[in-house]
Image 1: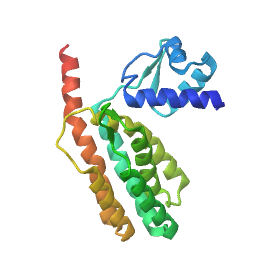
Image 2: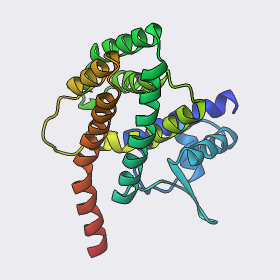
Image 3: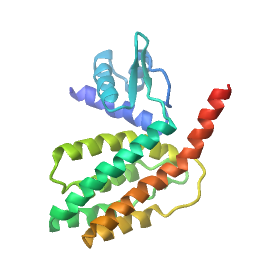
Amino acid sequence: MSGRGEQAWARLRGAILSGELPPGKKLPFQQLQDICGMSVSPVREALTRLVAGGLVEGEHNRGYRVTTVSRRDLDDLVSLRIKLDGWALERAIEVGDDEWEALCVADLHRLERVPRKLEKQRLHNEAWEERHAKFHASILSACDSPLLIQFSEQLYARADRYRRLSLTVEFEPRDVEEEHRAILDALLKRKKREAKMLLAQHYEATAAVLRKHLDEQEASQLEA
């Protein structure tokens, strides 16, 4: 991918994850060019990568649109992430060294140094989002299966849109920071079963916020 294509991909991916381009929205090339401030060629490159990552889908002879969200897709993603990331975390705990432990500790510390939301603007804090992704990648990084890590990264990218969407839905307060600390503590103590269980609960807690919302949304669409 060219440098311009990479920039277009980052801009459009950010627009999808933030909700600027909402689920199901059609994506005419002219609008995408305006968003990116680029010609059609890098935008095409970006769309190809976004389709491969599951954030955009092509419609036969009708262009592109942002991939829709659904309860079924959410459940599928959560189930796969619990299984694959659980395997990766277990293997990372088995073979990870002191440097890996230090990386995980440092990344959680960096994550906790920034607020999750920018209160005045009521917007997601992109610095938090980046550090959150880094922490989750780091705890699996000692896994000695590059293919498993690749699958995990792809699933994270798809699940991240649901996680961000959950931030816009009213829900019972939860202590995400404490959930992260508990996972790290189990990891450092090399408690594989406990770490896998806590990671699964962490994923499920986010999914639970959205399930009722998606069910209600899908029911209203059927009634319309």
